[in-house]
Length: 555
Image (tube, rainbow, N blue to C red):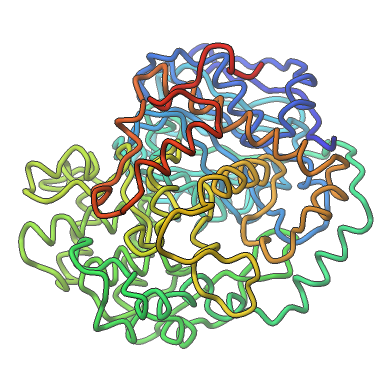
């Protein structure tokens, strides 16, 4: 089975030392990326750890496909215990850092302990340099990137950076790479902030020799030539369909249809797109560099999730205003989905939907933990009572845009996902939208056949995150192509994903997560939800309480 190569680099931030060790056996069993990081975290992070304490660890990791020239492979994984959910959480980002990471020669980098001063870690194939950077305290992401370029000649594509939000321990702070790409969900930027790490840089000339089948280029050619609407409109292309299905969360989830959708839909974003945008080695080019000269705003995006959070869910029908919100989140280092939804919760509490000046002010206040922003920085699950609004989260993570009250399998996916109400954990929404030409679609309503398919999708997405292969490759990656690329039977590859999901669940079980956490604010509205949940547990081999039996914990 194809897998990543290279040692684990462990960085002790307290002692400012580093060491390497062979982890070949783990790589062989877990491929790379999320799988390897999950296995290491399960072994090395205390089950009762405070996410913002020195005892928590952060793992960055890459996979074998970063040795390829294939589209959909420009991504990197990050894993830690989330300060937002309290569970083990993996997030991955696109951009261009993945190959620079691979050039350093390590399959994974582990950050342990905490520094007593603000530092930048320069990771190369010769080791780690610790740079004290007290003058970068409070610097935005662009300011930090500019410093690294000016002082060291290190461009944005070699960096991972936290902004003020990470330093201020905002529970949904992101880690930014290539300046505008985010390790977003779960607040892992706050974990770096708690460790006094402002940035990491990567480089070297020691990329491992991993032989990738030449037929990878079939996928690359198809990605280059396919006339996919995402190449023009990114994920926002689905907004009109969601709205037509009464499946577009609006006004802090109180409604499911937005009358101002035309102002924030795919056509609106396409009008503001001024060039192509992509990730390393990818010909699919689905990113959205946008600008509005009159407003003086330039950003990348927003994608559908952010257009929901700062658009329909906040009562905003102007794409330029959503672009401004997106740019502010990138500048300060915030997960734009959680930031937008949290702002929407505040707007609901104050009856201020559509107040864009207030929205932009709140984003800054959250990042700096000023005024009401200090409370909002804790996230919806911790602040909803004070605001007097409903808790629209699962396991502490707020909802993505694909509406589980309409797409019932996606609702089940939100409930059981180990990292909370996140759409990318299984990408089950792609199975339920009535898209032309889809031959594997399920009806949006009901649960028949969905628990089994959900498990398959969770396992496949865990494999993607370990490979690492972008989840937007779904129209190109057939079982036969997985087998061709990874040199293993597809069922054996899905078994790797199963081990990853089970290890995550077991870690979270030890932290107190069980069936009571696998629920939805609207579970009572979904006929058959509890039966589907039980069917999911049974197929996973877990108990009726959603707990992994001791004998089922993977090695």
